[in-house]
Image (cartoon, rainbow, N blue to C red; front, side):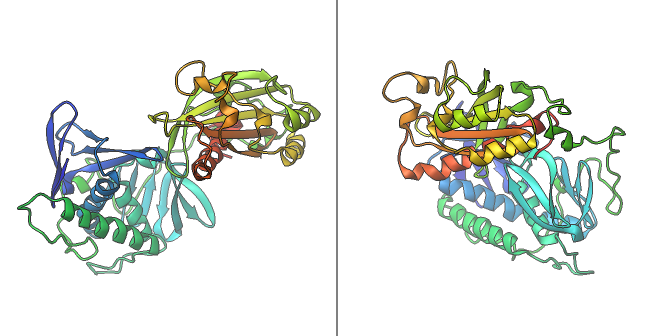
Amino acid sequence: MHLFEHGVVVRTADGRVQGFRWDSVTVLKDVIDPFRCVYSLNDGVAPPVVIDGFDRPEEWGPAIHGAVLQAHLPQARAALQAGRTVTFGELAATPQALLTPTGALPWAQIGAVKVENGAVAVRVREQWRPVTSTHARDIPNFLVLFTLIEELKSATPTSGSRTGWIIGGVASVLVIALVTGGIVVVKRLVRSGVSQGVTAARESATPTASPSDTPSSPLPSDTYTPTPSPSEEPFDPAVLGDEDSDQTPITPDALLAGSFTSRKGVRYTLKGTRSDDCPAWFQSGHVRQILRKARCTEMISGIYASANSTKSNRIMVVVRVIPLRDADTAESAWKKLRPGTTDWGFMCPLKGPGSHLCANRAGSWSSAYLYGWTRQSHRYVISSLALYENLATGRSAKPWLSDASKAALEAGGPMVYHDGTD
């Protein structure tokens, strides 16, 4: 891979050589595990290229993001100042509002933006709400959109000004770290003969918007018609508080998500499930005692693995969803249960990664450093337990295991079936 001032040239594993200009490419970033990210480049003309496995990713990763941001941010600003709409997959920005699949959010109503569990959310009237079901990793040039939201939230462009944009604190940090820092890396890695002196996006002149800034079917800049909402009555989560009113099937498909993304951006996929009596035969001690006292009768378990990892850095996470009689019983049991203890027992896939961890011999799962969480969701208690597949025992494993096991709690529970989040 060769990074240049105006673009990148990549030789793929099959020998194909392909180039992309920064000002016409879209980039997707997928965090596979704590040590690996995969970037996808697409200009809509040549076949997309996946960038993975090159040396020094800590340099070329920020360099790619910085260069794309430096090229596209001025274009997006110019398009908005001209009254046009700039699209980012399912999302779009107009001078007046952020357009989402469920409606328009005026900039003046947006107080903050964040990415949590891989999903984009904004704060509107002191409440956080997701803007799309699409993960940030699947939003093209997401950093450009994130920066625009930070610049425009709770503010409007200055009338008649070509530079009337308020850059928020987070956006400033992102621009400085990824544009200035990223372009410095491009300069350092640039091949001989390429001109020096790339100007940072915050200092560059505003160019004419490229065709890529205008959607094929542009939305009017002053109006937006949201998709009509269904006529059926919205689901009331209150029915989940008692087994007599809760219609959620007690099955793995209903209570376990197929995948989830942690706050650190690591993606996990479901590798195996099982249904057991409760308490299960593999649970013991304090956990078994509390669950028996709560009169639990059934339990759904699933095991997740960090996607596309190797044994040296793969994290395995077990999630257990336990329905109880009512919300009061669940709350009482949850307050007494200890998270992260071996009393919960573990679960292993029948084959593939992690299948060896349940062998009854030295080096099984119980010898690793473990970290877990518990929570209550209506009449359900949900528990998670994470470890490294290589049975790492160092305390340095804690931040990643805590991140994995905490995010896993959101991947289990009745709202998986009811298409929502707790």
